[in-house]
Length: 384
Ligand SMILES: *Cc1c(COP(=O)(O)O)cnc(C)c1O
Image (cartoon, rainbow, N blue to C red; front, side):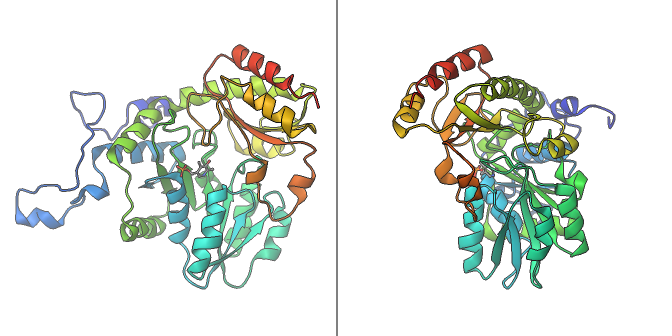
């Protein structure tokens, strides 16, 4: 069975028991019932919060995808990020966080962790050489996201892991963009990989979920204890949605990748577009690192427009109908948001180098001819 390819294994999970239905049942349970007093206290799961068959099969699918040995599920991607970092720090520690981390994760570090006595310093995701200078006596971990949210900067993960190992630091990487299919941080020696299942794994914009993955048994114990102490669990319906999504994840991702490239390449040649931020394009500044470390891309990328007025941008966005306005991504539908105000970078470099507004596009599973025709009509509104 080990020589099977990933898409096959995700459909025929080796650990799934024989049963009459293709899918595991959704068991809605807080209380589990026991035949005898002796079994009441073990073996686990002895309580619904620890998850049941759907959760076990989802964990198995995630371990396959990421090459992990242990998976801890979380109620959302953000809780998975928070849980992973909370599992490896204690009061008095200092951590380094990428300046292009998902905004709410930076907020967790800078507000919640800070209130618990853990300080953090942001680092520029591309400035690998400068990172060593930021390591302090009490630094214990580095939190990366590759490529980073909104700007799609690709960090040199192997180089950062090398530094971390030399200095005895743990590394955590938010792998939501790569989804484990196109990027496997644990293969590079990253200690913990984190995913928002809400995005491509669920794939239909109708459920939340998060996962924390590792090969390290001791770390897995600490992550499990964090979930236990905070009482965090993923609801069975959401776990089911994520497991169902995992079956078609490689296939859907291929389609998003193909469409994402077609639309990116088209946008890149458009006269109103200043730059397309998609690491799969040869013109992207980090394309070489992306090509070395990733096996593919997806439908999410950024676009920096040439200077234009707010009025014409509003007209452009207002004219869209296939591209809907909304947060999150990874579903079957195309989305677009202006996202300059979310940037909140430590230095003004990013905003300074953007001549016009920053948009984030998610290319869904619609036909690309229709999407391009709509973008073409919409961009024509940028007349001033
Ligand atoms: C969406 C997202 C999250 C958070 O996921 P939720 O399930 O919405 O909490 C975390 N990291 C990245 C990179 C994301 O895009």
